[in-house]
Image (cartoon, rainbow, N blue to C red; front, side, top):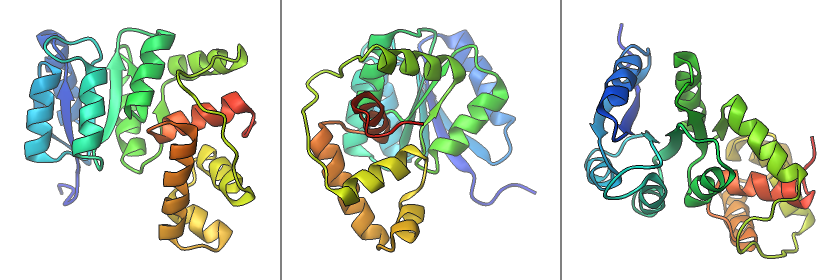
Length: 218
C-alpha cells in the first residue's frame, strides 16, 4: 500500500546521466515521492516554487545559477523546503558556503541509496544530516579553529545556551520545549534570536558555530 503522506522531493543536477541514476534510486524508495528534476539552479527555483517540495537535493556546481545561490533564494522563498547538497566535491569552502546558504544536509555523489534515503528522512524532520566524509571535514575544520566568514562575537543567556546544546544533540523544537518546560513557540523564538546573534542562517551554521566557539562539545 502506498504511503498516503510521502516525502516530496525535487532534485537538481546538470549531469543528465547522474540525474537519471538518482531519479531511479529515489523512485525506488518507500515513503518518498520524486516530484520533478532540474538541470540548473534557475530551473530548480522555478519548479520548487510551483510544487513546494519537502526536500530539495541539489548539486553545487551547475550552469546558469549554482547550488549555493539557488539555496539562498530557496530559503527566502520557500523556507519550509529542506535542502541537501549532493556534490562530487569535499572542499571546505564549498561545504561551509552551502551550509551558510541554508542547506541542512550534505552528501557526496558516491553515497549509497540507503544514505540518500536516510538523509531525506532526517532533514525532513528539520535535523541536519552529513555523510561520513563531510562530518570528518567539519570536525577537521573545527579542530584547526576555522573561522566562519563574518562571524560575530556574541553573548548568550543561560536559556539560549541550553537551547543551543540541545539543538546540537539533534533535539527538535518540540522536544526542547518538553525538556525545558517551555512552549514550542517560545523555543522557536529563542532559536531565531540565536541565529541572528551568531550571524548564521541555518541550524547547520548554528551547530558549526557552537563547536567552533566551544559552546558545545561531545
